[in-house]
Image 1 (cartoon, one colour):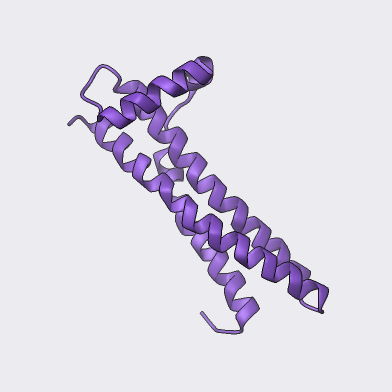
Image 2: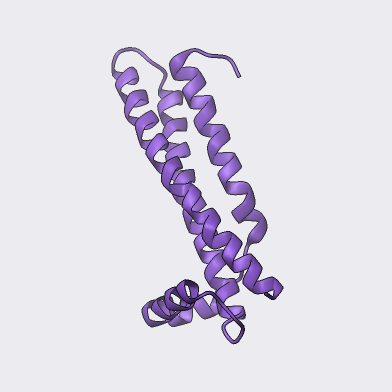
Length: 130
């Protein structure tokens, strides 16, 4: 496997960290909003919304990075699932995909930022210290 194929596979796997982060983010957001209505902090609710948005950004950053690497490695031996996904993306938005540049550092850091924000919100809501 070439370097671009390896990076494409890695970021295609990393994007799925966004799904559990979205579930926990939405749960924390609803609880934070509830606690705001009964006297809790609006800052906590705002940070919960931010943490939920970061979960979506985790998926998006890694998806875009994976697709950019797939496009770079389209003539090489991509796994079948990534080839099919690349073909769908090219049919949907060819110009957008062709102009996309991979952002591997953002894709790697984004899940950690989302987890950190969600842990901070959970600590504020449930009263444990980090």
